[in-house]
Image (cartoon, rainbow, N blue to C red):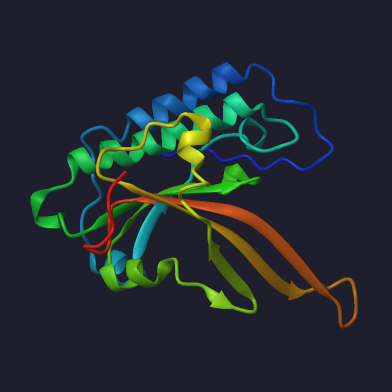
Length: 197
């Protein structure tokens, strides 16, 4: 498995030239996952998960540079990676669970991964602390896949969350910085009660 280069860009910066070329490179990266699955290791189990970020220029996915169609295409490629990994997963590792975490508006932070420890996977979305809270969004009215026309791998579930994080503001004495965004977990079921999409 080869890894491309992730390129972070700060504002102000001009829009990405030839985004279709960058999407083609991302498509090649996604296709490299066909027939490949990482080996099981003690290190992977200890960490609870392994994950990959798309090796692209941030401007391909993030506002204010990216057009919505570019972001949707990049999200679809991350979902395709999850499908490739599932198809290549050895039967002996069928207990491992694949996931894709899609972020809005910072889509570039999105990742595709594997829960290598099911207990870690069960607690991954349970975040209820003043420094970071994930509030579930109603799936009847909120679906990123439906809104963007994404094709979810068969058997996966989708759950959106509104994240609110509080952290100390280093520039303001006794000040706090509040950060909010939406996170979409599209993954294999972790509990028997979860119904696939």
